[in-house]
Image 1: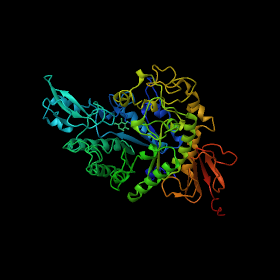
Image 2: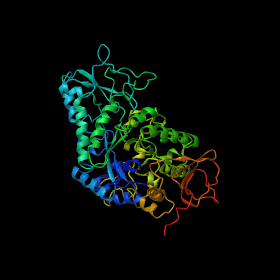
Image 3: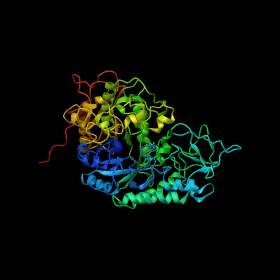
Image 4: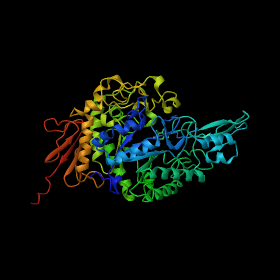
Length: 552
Ligand code: GLC
């Protein structure tokens, strides 16, 4: 059952809606989503039935990586609003029973941040440079990078600086773009500043933080090359053991506040046991489970992911999270419509053939499947509308550094960040108010009229209505949310499990329609049944017994 705002364990079952602020709703007509736009649509989120909203970074930033390059943690980007408005929004949302989670980006800051500007100005050997990873280059002229580490955004991880006198200077480390220099987490200022930032926002009523790139902060000071097969804790810039002590400190801060303030890690790690170590009682509350979204739409694969996830979380008594997408990955409607429906950053390719009708059916089935699994659920804005990945954004409108750094091989992530369609027949589809002075910052497809909130509200079979009904049932059905799951025997290609005493979820990933197990009612199905059978690529939620007799 879904949590109430008074519940200290709210996060164990919560449905958390991810707001990519630039693309949610534009309140002032400049083509960029903002806090005013979110405030106008809080009623929509309430009606959708979410427990919390998570904002991708809303701070002052040059937006070299969509705001994951923060130049001032205590200021809202002026295109989005200001601090007073953020405080108002947090309170208005709470009044509707919706908590606010914000993003913190501790691995790196913007190259425009005063710390980095001071480090550049102060020169080699200065204390200002100690907060980062400045190093001389290798080779006689120092013109080779200090390591050969490869960036998560493809390409190099070091950029050479120029000294005040114009001569080539030291290099600095950036696991992402050159505009995102990595911080040195061995430096006390770095630790103290982030703890102060946490307090700053907890003081303003945020219910939690999503921690960006949470497993990358600490580096091996000797800067060795990445071993071919690094053992646990042996990678020089990932999953280092010292991270746990940092998060224990953060947890102590979170726990010192009234209500439960949660720490949610963005942790991409192949070893699920190492992943679970971050979720020990005195560390993070939860972390995104990316394994499930990386798997193809195949029963055996998804079953393995579910089992492995639940098994890994059990020893640390942390709830699993279920995540079908976010602002970094291909939209489910598109991904599930492909011959290879698994996800990996390195295999994204422009022009992969896609069957969107198939993808939409599967995305509907996946929505019900994940909403029935134990733990908390993440919903990325626009997935409730079944938006596809936009793959034909004109080249001169693309912004994502992932695209540019791959030399154009990787389509980048702009396609899942296109502004939401709210109403009307033509762009901007109500994203911006009538008479707006600018077009949406990324162009919307002309054919999105059937996908607007307005259009879907009046269509009983729309994705939006499916999500609303699923989240409503998730709140009212005993057994959903946190708690045990029991697999029931079922045919190959199907996933059938019970939650509580009277609820069963059936997903059919086979190519034949299947019979449903015994039930007294069908609560919801992602597709209409076909002569009593559940069609391929569908999920049904069943009531399997009548409730206890009413006591007179
Ligand atoms: C995370 C964010 C992504 C960002 C990267 C660098 O993976 O989700 O959007 O580009 O970190 O901060």
